Length: 340
Image (cartoon, rainbow, N blue to C red; front, side, top):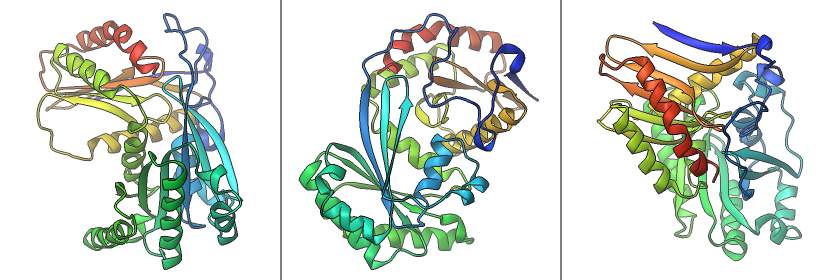
């Protein structure tokens, strides 16, 4: 059995927007919520999203941050030059996202007349390759991006997404192709640390990659993880997971015992995000959910102003009210940390 708590127009939270999205953005502060910590100074992080034209950059950005459904991304137009967007994440962290058009003529400008403008003050470079159609030109552009970063933002982190993995149906062939592409990328990375992910807009792999990217930008993670571990112990839980409120990307987690599915976090992100969008079509806003079966119970609820928490328990003696009470009591201890 499962239970969901939704709020609708009668509660003053009318939903709407493109693709049935709830009418709010990452980290948006809604009026009428009491006991909120004062807003910290805004911390902007410049993120470059680059790759060849048609590799899927804008589609993935729209799914994660603009609440598009995967099927709706076919309506998106190709990016021309650079599209800028500011995404507020966890209160005061702002992702200054530069979605760079992938046509050859734009790359000539990026590497020549706009080189310093594009590649200075970069926190993260995300480079996207089409898993089936990556060419030597794509790898050459990737290497040129790394050269430009070394000159202008030598502390930038680099993530490579081998995208559209869903077009390879056989899982063994998909993994083999990913490893081949990853090897090509690493050969051309000139010793720079690079994290590679196989991704698709049609499954949870997109959330795994973007959760890792955002995780790398959040300061003081050690403090947050210690507090999550303490919360996990207090709740006598098997696991506690923290999600960002609007995107449902995983921020961090604490686990008290070994759990089987290594991909459980991104699967839950994908499932709940899709459910939230479905709620929007019914003019309601998702707030909480309880799911129980013979083995465990999962409680998902609003935690701080910018996060959801999920608590997993296998002890049938733990009453749901105790879990919710512990979450409510812990909020004040997390507010300052999650305001960055």
